[in-house]
Length: 260
Image 1 (tube, rainbow, N blue to C red):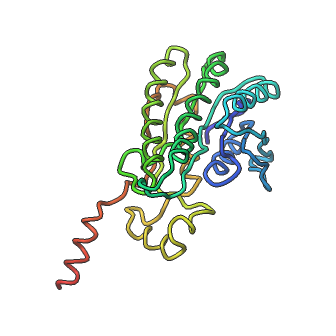
Image 2 (cartoon, rainbow, N blue to C red):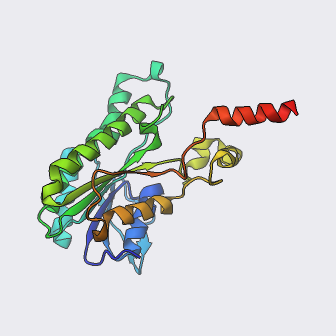
Image 3 (cartoon, helix red, strand yellow):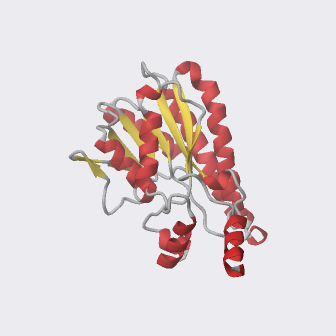
């Protein structure tokens, strides 16, 4: 297991879903974990006999993300890892998407993690061994994203930002990596993927026969953030369970089955 004892970690969007799982994993590994959100959660992530500390902040507002960093430094004296996990988008057809919605999606999924990373850099580079920033991107950023075009574009931009910052900050030992996450089963999955039947059909089509769970993303974060990964920076790590098979292969199999 990775050892993050005496290290401080910020997980944005850590009150639920994937962020909650990431926070739990770092707690279990010994870190002091701070999560943020606009509203306090009913339950805080727990692990290794401790629980995460919640700080109210809207990451879309630079003054609030900076205040979050300042509070973490006041409480723990250091910042070692930033996980830019907060994000998401409602489904909307591109022809019908209001400009304000498009701007809001890009602000949350691209501008906010970029600004937060810029702010965190000044704390991370003060550490003897630097620090780690991990951006949770999406498979939507590397393939077409119909119904969530702005989200896919923002995640594509986030992957580029990751690689650019990694080069700029390498000399200061501030490593920046991204995780390209595939489909993930969380408490909100049934609404997003068409209920239990929809999830079952999707999982049957995947190479590993299942979607990811938050722990899969969390384990990838631990890998990228640990000190032994000191030469990994600018990476965009696929955590997609071997990816999504092309639809034409499934249709061809169905057609062959009907022909027999």
